[in-house]
Length: 331
Image 1 (cartoon, one colour):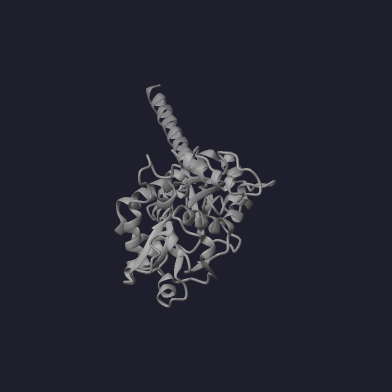
Image 2 (cartoon, rainbow, N blue to C red):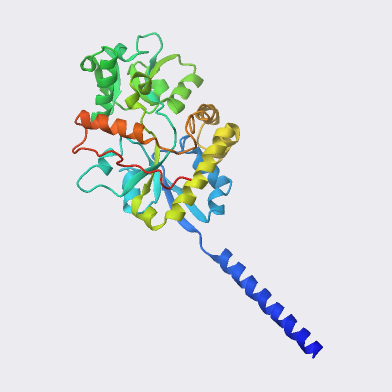
C-alpha cells in the first residue's frame, strides 16, 4: 500500500509538472502584438527613443513586435488613420486638418516627443534677422502653407514688423548650410535640434530666433506621436505598453546621448555620426525638459495654439478644446 501510494504520488507530481510545463509553454508561445510605427521623415534624433527601445528589447519585453517604416507621400497621418500603422510621428500644426473636419481621421496625439517647440528662423549672422522684424526686405524660403505664413505674420507683427515686406521664395531647401552660404535665400524655418546643429558643425555663423520666445502661443507640440484611436480603444493595454516602452527609450536617450547616438547610427548608417551625436546632446534637455515625465501633453498649451487658429480663421470649422490629443495611454 505504501509503495502504491508512493507510485500514485510520483505520477501525480509528474502530471502536475507536465501540466505546468504546458502552461509555461503556452504563455511563451503567445504571439506578440504586431505594431507598425511610421516616421514623418528619414530617421533623425526626433526618433531616437523608438530605436533605443527596439535595440534594448523594451518592446519585446512588453509583448510587442514593432516595425518602423518610412512615411508615404501623403504623410504618416493617412497611414495611421487607415489602420496600416498603429502609431506614427506628426505635428500639432500639420495634423489639424486631419482631426478637424466633417469626417475627421481616427487619429490623436498620444505623446509629445519634445516638450517645447524648437523651431524658428535661421539666417546668416549679422544681417539683422536675429529678430522677426529684421526679415523685412529679405528672401524667405516658404512652403506656401497658410499656418506657416500666419505664424510669421504674427511674430513679425509682435516685433513691429510687416510680413508683406518679406520676399517669399518657393522652398527647395534640402541643405540649410548650402542654401544660406549661396545667398539663394536669407531666412529658413528650421528645427534647431537638427538643422541648427548642422550649421554649427559646418562653422556657419548664424542668427536665430525661436517662435515660442516671441509669442508663447507658438510653444505648441511638434513633433508628437499619434495613434489610431479605433485601434487604441480596442487594444488599450497594448497601446499603454507601447508608450511605456517608448518612454523608456527616450528616457535612456536623454540620460546617455552618446550611446543613443550610436544606436541611431547603427539603425540608419547613412547618417553623419558627428551630426547625430551633437544633435543628441542638444536633445538631452528637450525630450522631457520641465515636464513631470516624457510624453505628457499640457492641455492648456495644446488648446492655446488651436484657439489661435480659431481666432485667425485658419481652420475650416471651430476647433473645440481638447481636440486631437489624449494623455490616457501614458503611464
